[in-house]
Figure 1 (cartoon, rainbow, N blue to C red):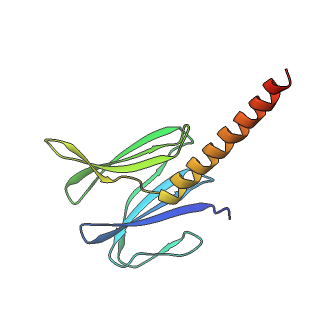
Figure 2: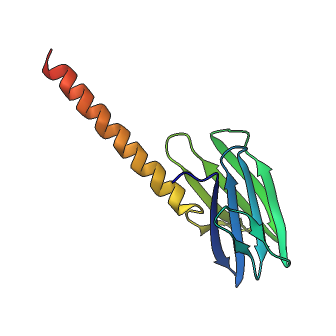
Length: 133
C-alpha cells in the first residue's frame, strides 16, 4: 500500500523522537515529546511535543540537516540516490557517533527490495537478449 507519509518513532534518552517524511513535498520533520502519537495517516497529535526540525530536501539526492536539542548537536543525514539511507548522528567535541543507524527502516527495506527486483529483471532481460544473438 502506498502512503504519502513515512513515519518512525525512536526512543532516545527516555524521550520519543518522531520522524516524518512527506513524499510529495520532501518535507522532513522531527518532533520530540513524551506522549507523541502518530496516526496511520502520518499526522502527529500531541500537546507536549516540541518540533525540533522541519526542513525540505527539495528532492536533492543527499541532504544533511544540522540541529541542536538540549545542548547537544545532531545531524540528520538522508540519501536516496540509489538506495534510501537515513541516519541520525550526534556530534561532540571529540567525536561523532551514530545515534540511529536507520531512521526509516521500512523505507530502506522497500528500496532494497525494489532495487533487487529491478536488477533481477534487468539480468533476465539481458540474458534473453544475448541468448538469441
